[in-house]
Length: 233
Image (cartoon, rainbow, N blue to C red):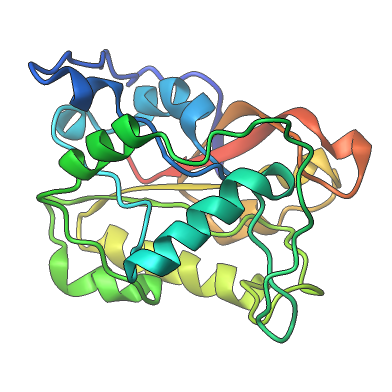
């Protein structure tokens, strides 16, 4: 069975450093996200490999043309819980949210985020496209669609087969000496007999962190729940 821990003795002493540019320090994610990590970041950094705590980059967003970007931000700020979902035809199908006066464009934050991303290269594709760019000096964080995931509304699905393929890739990179971290749902929140994630990541460190999740079709699966943070160090 995997080694499951809630507090690591190798916890990092990382603290956010104030930048001389105040806008860089204040930059926040400009999109709402059902699986967002803002509330988890203080827990997650304790599990970062020490040598990467002060030199890391977040690859969270992709861009296309300006019109598509504006449309996407508008939907994100006005639809139900900021959820992005498409039907099996690929059409966006999230209803309006109940917001009286939502902030559509927080220009100062967008400018701060833009500044942070000036030296970042963002690529879109299968998770295996990172392979040519990493080596033993690389820290990789995976944040796949959590299991279980609904397949009824999606044109394509990150199913169990995809989870297994990612676990195999995780092991492949581990053999190369890459520092790895991966997030996923805690299956025991829903089914105490479900050991799927534990089994495919057997042999790695499995830590529990806690977050408030408000999007689920079942009310008793909302609120503060545990999630898994898997590392190879």
